Amino acid sequence: MIALLLAGALLVAPDPYVVPSLQDVASQPDPARDAPLQLEDVTVTGRPLDQMIRNFVAEVAEPNPRRGLARWNGDVCVGVANLRGEAAQYIADRVSTVAEDLNLNPGAPGCTPNLLIVATVDGGDMARTLVRERGRAFRMGGAGMDRGGSALADFQETERPVRWWQMSLPVDADSGARATRIPGECQEPCLSSTDYAPQIDVFAASRLKTQIVDNIIRTIVIVDVDDVSHLSIQQLADYIALVSLAQIDPDADTSGYASILNVFDDPAVAEGLTDWDLAYLEGLYQSERSDANRRANRTEVAASIRRAHQRIQQARDETAED
Image (spheres, rainbow, N blue to C red):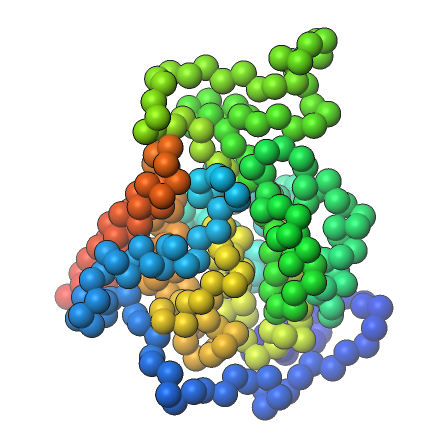
C-alpha cells in the first residue's frame, strides 16, 4: 500500500504527521448505491452507448473558458518532488508510460519537468505558497491559457486529496505557432503593436472549422499524503495520469461510471485506469479538434471515444480467444 511507501519516502516537512490507518480512512461502501457502470457493459443496460459517452464527456471535461478541449502535444517531462526512491520513480514511470501510449514523448532523465507532481502534508498550504511565490506560472495572462481567477482560488482553498492546475496555449494546428498574445512578449523589433501580437496565416476562412487548437503546456499536481494513504501506488499514479494528461473537472460526478476518478470514494472501484478512462484519453488524443463550435468539438471527441471503445473491446475479445 502507498502508505508504506510514502511513510519512508517523504522528505523533511515543517510539521510532523501520522499516516492514518486503513480503518480510519477507508471509504464505507453504500449498499444502496448502484454499481458503477463498466464501459463494456453499456450496450446491455438499456442506455445507448453513444449517449452515455456524451454524458461522460460533458461531466468530466473542463476546458478553459471559451476554448476547446486541450491536450498535450509532443514532449511530456514528468517530475516528482518531495518523494524519493521507489514511490517517486514508480509514479514518474507510470505517468510517462500512459503518456507514451498516447503517442507523446516522455522526457529523458534530467529533462526540465513540465508536469510536476508535488507531495506534501498540507495540500492547501502548498498550493497557496506556490501561487504566492510563482504567480506567473499559474496565470501567464494570455487569453484562454487558464481556467480563471475563481478556479485558481478553488485550487488553493478547496480540500482535495489531489489537486491540479494546468496551463494551455492556443496554437496554429499546422505550424504550432502561438495564437494568443502573452503580456511582455514580442517579436523583434518590438516597435509597433503588431510585434506584440502573433501572426497566423489562415489557410481557409470558415465559420465551421478552425485551425486553432489548444495544447497543454504545463501541469502541477499536489498530493496530500495523509489523504491518499489508503490507495495503492498504482491507483494514485493512474489517477494522476488521467487528471494531468487531460483537462478534468475536479468536481465531476462520475459515480455512475467505473472510473479511476471515483477511487477516493471507493478504492475498490478500480485498480487503475478503467476502460472508460482509457477510451476517454485515447479518444481525446485521436480527435482532430477542428470544429469551431465548442459543442461540436465535444461531439467530435465523443465520437472518437466511441471508436476507441470499439478498439479496446476488439482487443479484449481477441485476447479472450487466444
